Amino acid sequence: MFHTLVAAPPDPILGLTEAFKKDHNPQKVNLGVGVYKDAAGQTPVLTAVKRAEETLLQAEKTKNYLPIEGHSEFDQATQALLLGSDPAGGSAGRAVTAQAPGGTGALRVAADFIASTLAAPRTVWLSDPTWPNHPNVFQAAGLRTASYPYFDKASNGVAFDAMLSTLESLPEGDVVVLHGCCHNPTGVDLDRAEWQAVAELLCRRHLLPLVDFAYQGFADGIREDAAGLKILMQHCPDLLVASSYSKNFGLYNERVGALTLVAESSSGAAAALSHIKRVIRANYSNPPSHGASVVAAVLTDGELRALWEEEVRAMRGRIQKMRQAFVETLQAKGVDRDFSFIARQRGMFSFSGLTAGQVQALREQHAVYVVGSGRISVAGMTEENMDYLCGAIAAVLAG
Image 1 (spheres, rainbow, N blue to C red):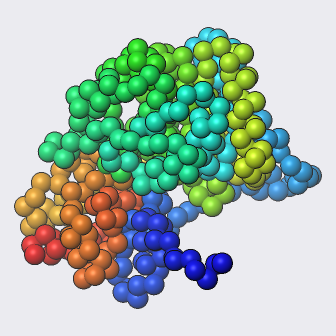
Image 2: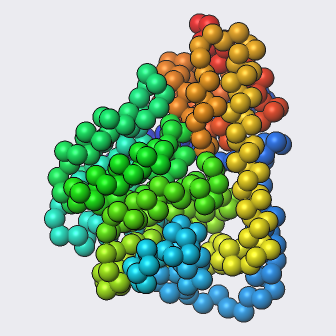
Image 3: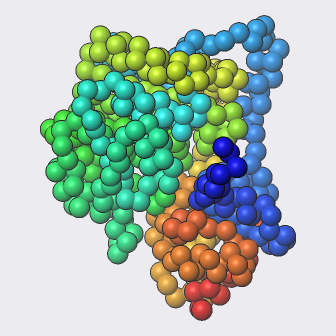
């Protein structure tokens, strides 16, 4: 039976990391996977996380299962972080949250909920481009996917008129996936006026927004980055949010995420949560405890919360510093192409404009690993590798 199988193609991002690990070039640079690196090129454990873990270890008395919807304090803290202290516009109970194994797990729970619970067949609309795993997640749940325009290559900005035009034409009840901030892969976000226009359109056309919110705190700030989400909440009677603590807590291997649902009424929210729990029970039964306990401990302790926010501020500042250094070093290397847009983009990623051939040359000739689309992880740049990286790009662009 199994001997007839043909190997599946490697994941375009994680497969790149596997190839990077096998490369023996001592100057190799990995700008593929979205993992934060400090000045030493390491992915650190946050101090707030370590302190919370130390306290939890001493206090822990059981390894019993969590409820299906997860750690209750974690769920409540997640709601407050996303939606603010008045999470559902003054109507108590409109928002419900279920813990999930990472942001990807939250997306899959949302996909299964949509596919199994909402009455009509629905298409899930993804930005063009989007995170490469988005289509996989929704299609695996049996949902059809399609794309709406998002990135304008000419301006290196949002193709907003084309985006609105396409969204205006979608069938009622379809699902629109939006990136809450730090759009992956482009690094280009909607501004407040654009969020307002999108929210009004989604409400008027009876479309269901699903916000993928994986980078809260990495654009402008923890509260500032939720601005688009809060605008959607003010206009849309129903809303789904898949959030992740991989990046802003550095909890990559703990797989900590959540699915938050806002409904038009508290009774609708409660009914929806019962279906979300049914989906979870059939998938992984209930979520792991440790990472969620860490997040809950940090977000509910004033001192740890302040320390965590400072650490997020430092990570955000470092990424912005690397963006500026990248632009300036390319200029110093004599590159005449204008890469200044990199400094204006936000978050861990940028759409560099490098072609597939240039990406291949970077890998084969210089051991610089970039996703085939030209998306680069700015978070993988350091002061130490910047000169070599920009020199390699300059050489490839010179042909």
